[in-house]
Image 1: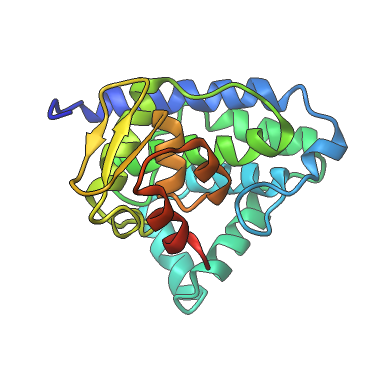
Image 2: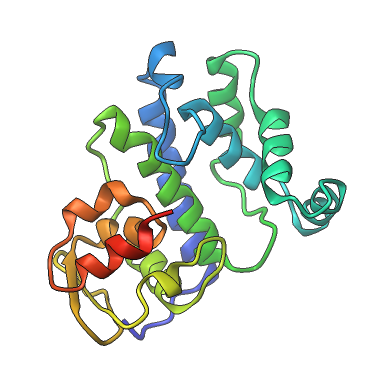
Length: 214
């Protein structure tokens, strides 16, 4: 997993994953839009609005927003989510479709923004029973990023001292007790989504479960 992929290629992957999510969202009814996602207290619609906000907020606007929220990142996210949520679910989806090919981001960590759409798409799909998953290649780029640093989530700390091996692709990382599973399951576990821990096997899984307890 030492090959370096270009920023343009990472953005292209993000665009593909956003478009796939938009297609899935087009099939939802209002009850499904109101379902709780895997992302904390947010509903499906709120996660979509958050994705739109993230792809519409450059570095300067992000900084102004964070300062305006007195560095309360939950408040910052809530304000931007409200700004980009539509008056109807159809409008929320239309706003999301407009940013499918956006390369706007609050930082230059492109793998993190690919991770934003990959993780949040599964936050939506899993509770709704939607089986679509991102490409193994795209998920592997996010997994590599998450295993190498703590960014928006403490992903590196989550897997410190563990050996991760994907069962469906080339992703590997770390040393220690083994944790195996699909690339997306490993990625979601690093993002703190406990629903995916049951998809993993190996002697390192109990350590992940312990670290994932709030």
